[in-house]
Amino acid sequence: MWRLKFVLILFIILGLTTNFVVAHEDTTGTVKERTRLMKNLGEAMKAFSLILRAQNNYNIESLSSIIRKITDNSGENLTKLFLEKSMDITSRANPSILDSWPDFSRIASDLFNESERLERRLESSERLIFNEVVKSFRSIAKTCKNCHTQFRRN
Image (cartoon, rainbow, N blue to C red; front, side, top):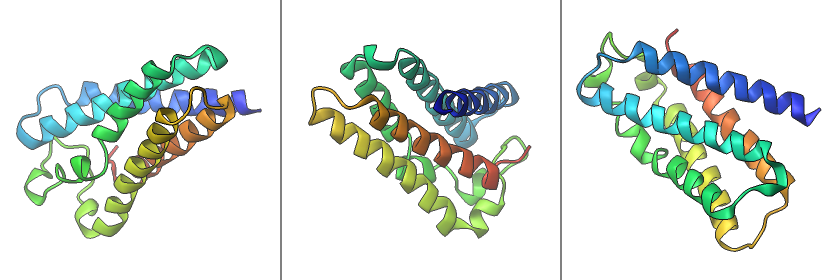
């Protein structure tokens, strides 16, 4: 059952990031920076999912590097790129972000907190139980999905 959920989450992430990158090839300024950040997050999530496919054969250093990328591209580093002036037509960001700033900010913080929590656990342990890593992946993926559902234009 968890494999089916994992595959579904993976397809959602792949679909969201692929469309996102193609749609923003001609952006500039803050929108371009934001697009790059989202691309980094998408690449990190893809790499994270590949590690999970390897199940218990993952490398802690590789996983830590991926989680660091997610942490670095979330929280305030993410929210600072969603200014009123950056909500132009080339952006897939829904302008409702500005009206729902507390919700958007909370989701960005949730992404940061969940990835940082996993990062700390990886630093303090030789090996995490695989199910704990899967649980963290699902939580991070759910956070991404929640944000895209609420705050991304189609």
